[in-house]
Image 1: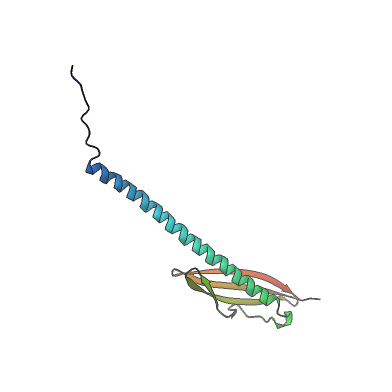
Image 2: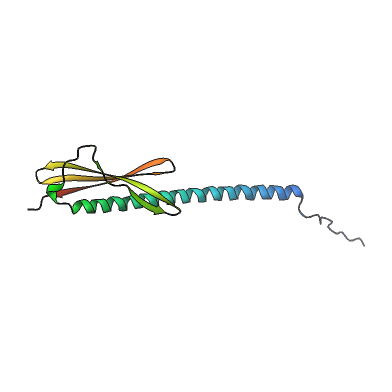
Length: 135
């Protein structure tokens, strides 16, 4: 009686291993690109949130100024001191500008604009409020 035994004990060939490694490498590179994009977006959102906080803080300071002391700045506005904030491993400079426009004898429009640069791209965040004379 003859026994038939399978003689395919060779395992995987070098070509099969290399193809599997290339497929894994392509998948890993796609995941790394996705991770880098999410980190970039997270940092940009964090900087924008910080700019909103800087604008709100400046607006609160302006709200504490007496109405009569708020003078019309014209379209160019007036530069406020630059605000430095630490962010992760570095620091970011936020340039602040305020524009005050007379709407009527009893009302003024105040706009605070914050500008910052991240990776060579300049971004801006603005908030606007109306101040009325207390009667």
